[in-house]
Image (cartoon, rainbow, N blue to C red; front, side, top):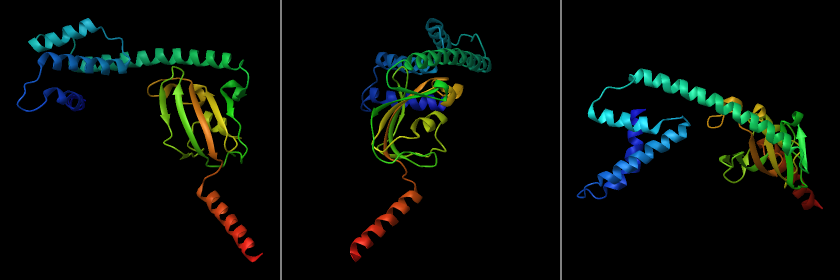
Length: 236
């Protein structure tokens, strides 16, 4: 962990030193380190007392004793992180339930799995429809209720329904080629309490179906059918 932190500090702070003959601006460097440490602490989501944190850093620089040993500190942090995570999971679950309850009242919302998967057709399609055994070619973007994006396709991507989360799988069955949908998925059918950054979060997918089945078998069958058509045209 220490090596990783020092590596991150070096990457972000190296530009402050400039050319070798120039001395670093210590005040600027110190402030940048403070920003970096604060940003990392914020990403942990822990209720840290900043005044006490600064006091601990000052004490460390002067060789004063630590309130806790390193092992005790790590253990306390792990317990605090788990407690914070549980609180966040309960909050996210309540928000998910409330959102889906209200969302169901909107026009055009289709409900599946007792309301735990909902979708709205943004643009109708007219091609083949996705079947449970297909491997569709899609474009998609996933986000949380707060608008934060957690994943997206890089262009068109082949999706294995066997590997997809249950809510995504159920939400795209029956989509027609060319169709666009917005999926709303309850955490029970998404990542549940094990979601890394947002435990028990409702997730929203914006999806577009390019091809209902782009598996190797389907592609081979399509190529064979095209060959039969071309042969038939040639002998007519």
